Amino acid sequence: MKPLLDMNHVSIDYKTDKKEFNIVKDLNIKIEEKMKYGIVGESGSGKSLTSLAIMNLLPDVLDISKGSIDFNTEESRDLSKLNKKQMRKVRGNEISMIFQEPMTALDPLYTIEHQLLEVLRIHKNYSKKEMHKMGVDMLNKVGISRPEQIMKDYPHQLSGGMRQRVMIAMALICEPKLLIADEPTTALDVTIQAQILDLMNDLSEKNNTAILMITHDLGVILETCERVAVMYAGQIVEESTVEKIFEQPAHPYTKGLLSSIKSLGERSKELYSIPGNVPTPDNYQELGCRFATRCPYAMDKCFEQEPPMYEVEEDQFSKCWLHDEEVQVDE
Ligand code: SF4
Ligand code: MG
Image (cartoon, rainbow, N blue to C red):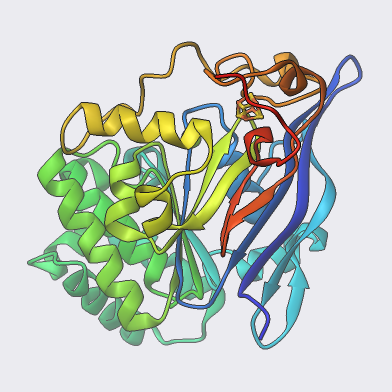
């Protein structure tokens, strides 16, 4: 069976009259039905652009220059080829998205009811009364007490945690096949974070919704996902099951990320302790490995030739010259 979402060799370029450079390169991601898949990386790694590319919401200066994004339900569609109208039928209905900052995603001028039911108005054919009932039920499901009252409220009358619950309700009310959650809990405090993640997991299991979780926080991945892609500077550098990545990371960058959370105890808010920053796209290592400027194992070859993706173990992939049998590692 084909995977629900199949990103094949997707590259995203920045293009204006004056400048042109590659941002995301050769992305391959397969998400099966009902699967919980994570993309982890520091900010600037291209993970949010990946989600915008799936939703066909890239800003005009960015362009999918290569590859396909196949979405396979009863029919198969390459999302990158759909026009605006076709894409509107998919968005909110078959694929929905939760963003980091619920306040900016909710419109301050409309009631919760108006916004919650909007996707139903667009995509389905229910009576007003039916929709109202579905809205109340959905708010109940996301753990909002007094849903009738909340329906009449405006976003500013709700707490951050409540707004994020409303966002989840909005994202799931049409029972999408895929839910993309981009840093869904980063703006919330830790206890509420855990509740929201549990809630997303619960509801997606009940509705058979697959999740693409996008985060800088490996802890979130560990709690929610089955598979994970580690992104660095616009490329996937390691991909495997969550178990393998945590127990036996193969790529030097993944190892760095993991040691940064381990050294901080249970959970860290900031992923970080590898010296230096993610390079900006106009400074990507043109040749060689994009991580070479920060990698403790970098060799001459790493600055000269891009490493391929190696299958280092069954179902574990890592893009690093260290896995090449011919490469001599100086100790
Ligand atoms: Fe480090 Fe070289 Fe591997 Fe890149 S290819 S991660 S620079 S060892
Ligand atoms: Mg982001």
